[in-house]
Length: 109
Ligand SMILES: [Cu+2]
Image (cartoon, rainbow, N blue to C red; front, side, top):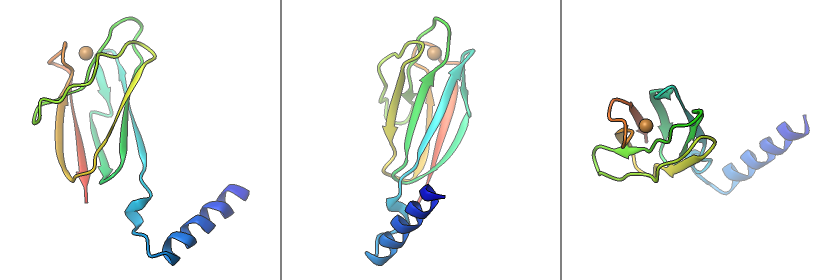
C-alpha cells in the first residue's frame, strides 16, 4: 500500500505541475529465445524504452532496423540492449546475422 500511495502522490504532483501523461515513460522487454523475438509485435508509446534480452544458450543476436539501417552491437546470452523511441511510427527490425528473425515496434503518439 505504501508503494501505491507514493505513486498516487507522484501522479498528483505531475498533474499539479501540468506535466503531460506521456512524461511517465515505460519500459518494455522483448525476449530473444530459439531465434525468435517475443513478442514479435510490440506496441509502445512515444518516449518509451524497449530492451531486448538474449535468453539463448549460446547464440548471439543483434537488432537491425530496416528503415534506418541502425544496428545494435551483437549481444550474447544473458546480455541486453535498449533503445528509446522518441517518435511515433512503425519500426520494423530483424536480427543482423539471422535475417529470418523479424520483429516490429509500433510507437503510438
Ligand atoms: Cu540472431
